[in-house]
Image (cartoon, rainbow, N blue to C red):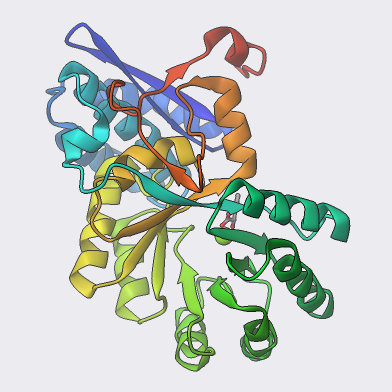
Length: 331
Ligand code: SMN
Ligand code: MG
């Protein structure tokens, strides 16, 4: 995690991304000077300056994650300055957002998989996500077990992380369908937009194709949507250049009538996803939920399968627990 504090108007703002130390170096050496002196009420202006300044480094990847962390801190600062939760600042359209629980790694034993997914169903999550894509045969058995663990009333999502070929993904979609899989994420590598489109066109009825977690800039999402690659677009504000970038992605979804789902970092996404009209849910990725609870006061905590921002806390509602974070600091 790379955490950023921004200061102005007697307030502070906190943003973060999940990225390499190189991202922090870029923020420290370049972006911090770049945003200094900007109007704290206009994060979008600072965002434009950052995008311009990093042009020659190449935009996707480290540069975009660095912009994301700073942009998130600047939005938090603005919201704190105005004493508004970020959802209110952006214009809330809902008071809570459904969350799907996510884990189910291929490295788990069958018992671990059952216990995790079944536990989430018992906690009240309406949908849960598990990994597939490592061993096609084993995956079918794992999906069968996943369904058995959660019972009939919970949606089952699978994420192949691009682990299948086009033909195998089509075959797996047919094999997963009897277990009520309603979401097939990255059945093929997400750079294969025509492949995603092919699977989407031929997937069993009721099975949505999802991708977008490697999106760093608006043009990437525009290409993905322009190819008709997905039913649900995923976006991650720790990657897609922060809240400013996320607003652009939401506009693309809205224009095409597509659903938007948050990837990872639940504590960062709960507030903005209460203000984005195309948003359908956020991902309650279990490792991030744990890390964010460890490092932040005000971290997201799912209740009955939903995340509800605290209306009394401004911005993202997060405060870095300095003493706990210091134990893990790298400098
Ligand atoms: C994922 C990728 C990287 C880190 C955590 C989780 C995964 C997801 O692809 O969609 O949750
Ligand atoms: Mg994924």
